[in-house]
Length: 455
Image 1 (cartoon, rainbow, N blue to C red):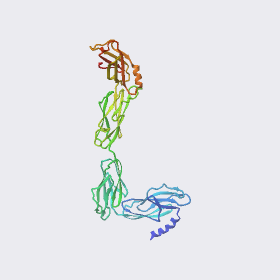
Image 2: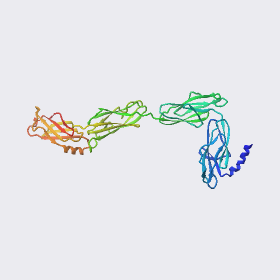
Image 3: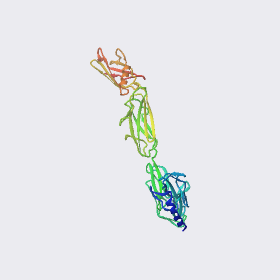
Image 4: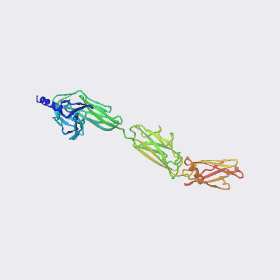
């Protein structure tokens, strides 16, 4: 009877008060009644209700008092007091209900001189505990259990205990786990009945199938607990570039493969690049440097689960053309976070004569030489002619200084160190006596001499 009289006495205060108290539910607000019923929760759970205190007066007002008095109730979030609130403005705060034991509860909520009654009930029910590093953590409905980050395909288990704290037997009619990456309960099979003071343990397993955030639910007799975890991609192995031959020279085709430092645990894609740095300053790039089939300086590769080597454009290896210029080849393999390099030096070489052809013409003798000079420094030419008996013909070795011509040619060429040379020699007398010729070309490294070429 005294409670009823108290409520009647509060009615005029609420009607005339400066402050309007609003209950916020699902993003919408409604005026709070003189008695706010927050409903019934499990005695082991926690409930948090959101309120707003709005200044209903025509002028700014000072909020100086915000409090709650009553067992099981406490203020959650709220503003630092005192705070000035303009006319029509509002401040938000929360009220927390943690009963701890079954029963009916009530409290007085005060906003300055405006007050109202808040009540809630707690029903006896099983308690859910999380076993964490040898200690138990009681979980309230809505609580989140984080399984942490785990590599995809791995498993992580957390142990729970459902306990009956009451004096009577408790029925566990629902105990279920949902979520693609979660399974359980392991070790328990509902429905079951727990005797007073008894409990039953079980496990929930987290097994992410891929990378990304995973969420699930653990339901216990209508109460829901959130499960969360994160899947991580397995770490990718480091790529290693393998060349055959391991120390190539200019003018070669090299087989390139990518080995992995361990078997891949997931499929992945990467790329292999090559760049060229000429040895001599001012020397232009060499377009002949690059991969073959597919042509270019970048080639994609793939890695399959369990593989110990990459597939380059669908194959186990790819050909690399070293070009015709001295310098450095730098190959870079990128796979996930890894970027591995292999540098290959292409040493300066004497001129390489790939073909030498000799022919008699109406006006004399003609020589055609193709080859490459990876230093682009060819200068001196020498030609020695022989008769059928192998004797050197007069006037002996014919030397020509051609450095300026070679230099002009290489400066205007876009073909690296490749060149083609045509030399014509007029003959007085019997050209049929000339049976063969040897050609020498000197560059900054040394002198290259051809085999004797017949006419």
